[in-house]
Length: 250
Image 1 (cartoon, rainbow, N blue to C red):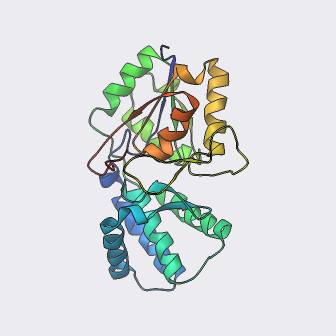
Image 2 (spheres, rainbow, N blue to C red; image 1 turned 180 degrees about the horizontal axis):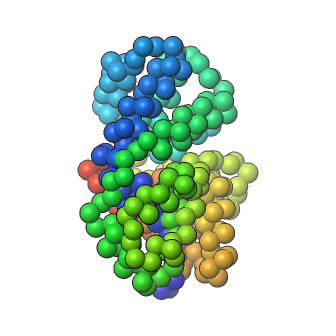
C-alpha cells in the first residue's frame, strides 16, 4: 500500500551525532561528577566506555531495568549507558523510577548544549519529502531544541513540519498488550522489548489526525530498537538509516 505520510526520527537520522554531541558530553560528564561528588570522572568514564564497547551486547540503555537500546549506536545513548553503569558502581539511585528520572533529567538539560550539525543531505531530503507528503518528526529530544535546529537548517516548507518531542520511545508499559512483550532476532542473544506505549500513543495520534493506517506510514530512523521495531510490528513500512556504529544484527 502506498505511503501517505512520513515519520522521521531526528538525532542521527537528520543530524551528525558524533559532532553535535561534543559540547553535550562535556557538560553531561560534569553534571555526573557533581552528582557523585567527584572533581571529574574522565578516567573512570573512559574505562567504563572501553568496557562497554568491548562487550556491547552485555550493555544497553535501560528503562525499568531492561535494555531498550544498544549501547554503542550513538554518542548520546552511549553516554547514558556509561552514566547508568556509574550509578551502579557507586550504588546510588537504585530504584528504577528514581534512576530513570535522574538520567532523563540530566540528559534533557544537557541536550540544549548540543551543536547544530546536520547531515549534508538533510535539507535537500527534507525539502523533497515535504513537497510530496505530510512529514512528521517524532523524537525523544526536547521539541523546542529540535524546532530551533530546524529553523537554522531552514528547509523550504519548514512550516509544514509537525514535531512531536519528548516521545519517550524508550518507555515500557507491561500493560500495553497490543503487541508481544518482546521478540528475539538472529544475531542477538538478548530480547528486544516492544511495549513502548508512549511511542505508540504519539504514532496513533498522527495516524488518526492524518486518517491513515499504519501500513500507509513510512517510519525512518537510525536506531532499530527505539525507532522502528514497534512500528514494524504494527504494520508500518520502516527504513533504517545505518552508520558505522549500527550493530550487524540491526
